[in-house]
Amino acid sequence: MRMIKDLFSISSRNNSIGLCLSGGGALGFAHIGVLQSLEDNGIFPQQIVGSSMGAIVGALYAAGITPSEMLQLIKDDKLYKISKLMTFRAGFLKSGLSNHSILRELIKELIPHNSFEQLKLRFHICVVNLNKAEWEIVDSGNELDLWVAASATIPGLFETLRIGDIFYVDGGLLNNMPAQGIEEFCQIIIGVDVLPHIVPAELNKPIDSLAFAVRTMQHQNSREGRDLCQFIIEPKAIEGFNEFSFDSFQTIYQHGYDAATKYIAENPKMRKLRK
Image 1 (cartoon, helix red, strand yellow):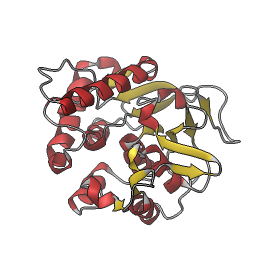
Image 2: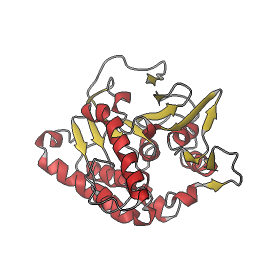
Image 3: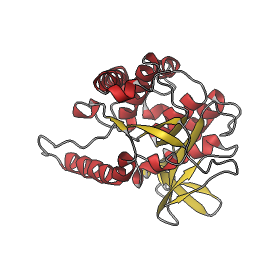
Image 4: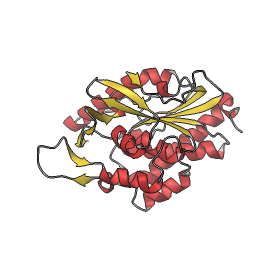
């Protein structure tokens, strides 16, 4: 792996609270519920890192968009179904079924300055560099929309993003819990993993076996990042929904809110993070 750092990177840890948001498709709507619960409990992260859906939610939150405003965006169909964020392309010669033009335009609409440096919170994005077969952390520059799109580029579904001579795809492919991206900046890291490992009740269909195998791979590549987190919140929406359950955003959101609220109540050390 390799981390891309800007010229203003801090070389030593401080007392910042960091938040690491995993990928997980529609299950990532739970991140919004977690953020709302953290705010309701007086906990406000200063550093955020995310992969895939975690990068999308993280970018909006770092820009100052509140959890309730994000929920309204979903209700307004802007962050609702994956089809709303896709522009389908015909032909078999493309590297994906869709490009990221709608997502990129949405980011630029909601965050007009399109700059990492002008965000209200320090924000870091995990992407996968296919040329080097490594994950990378990006946290500077004036192409926020491009890097958010790169982190959410599910291989095969979205066209691979080419930046210069390098091809980039979904950060969750190699690191679904990229807490390494904020380790040097934070004394405390709160992790939110919407794809925690669960034992399947049954695997009767090929698609079920494939989905569970992919989740197992993602959980494995999340271990190092999870180990860096002092606190891990695991919404259990995965037990009843999947990465494409976009219609169930409200219920998934509630799973996130309830999981975070319960976790905070059961962990006195986390309650000490309140401002």
